[in-house]
Amino acid sequence: MARQFTFRFDTMLRLRQQREDEHKRIVASRLREIGDAKAMIDELHNQIEAEVQAIRVGQSPGNIDLQQTVRHRHWLGHLHRTVLETEAKLRGLEARLAQERSALAEAAKQRRILEKLKDRQKRRHQMDEDRAETREDDEMATMRFHFERGTASG
Image (cartoon, rainbow, N blue to C red; front, side, top):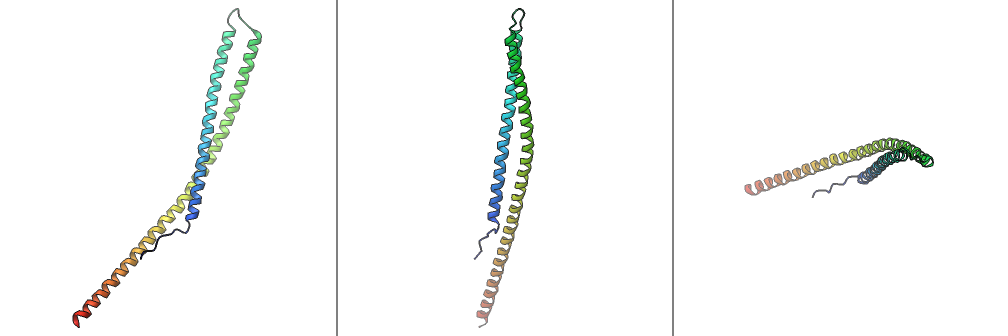
């Protein structure tokens, strides 16, 4: 009767898989944050362009409202500062993403190590089972041969 294969480190393998899955979630979350920051930067650039256009319209010949121009320039400065802050945040997110991808790669490596060990042990178990089965078959054939030889001569 063949023994069922059991991997002694199955719990550890599950824990490593869970750790890898958690790192995948973290990387995916960071990628979303980076996408959001890039979208915000694009939106800010669009707002800057619209504000510059509004300033040009406000400064058409014979129609200059100084207070309106000051407000536009103040808002334009705010938009530029926000772009710079968001770009700095983006660089920070990208640096953290690099670290998190590295952690994910390490977690995947640790999981693969255990999976390879499990595969090797499973193959070894199967080879041992095959050898035992062959040995049993050989013993049965030997016993049958001796039995038939004993009944034929007697």
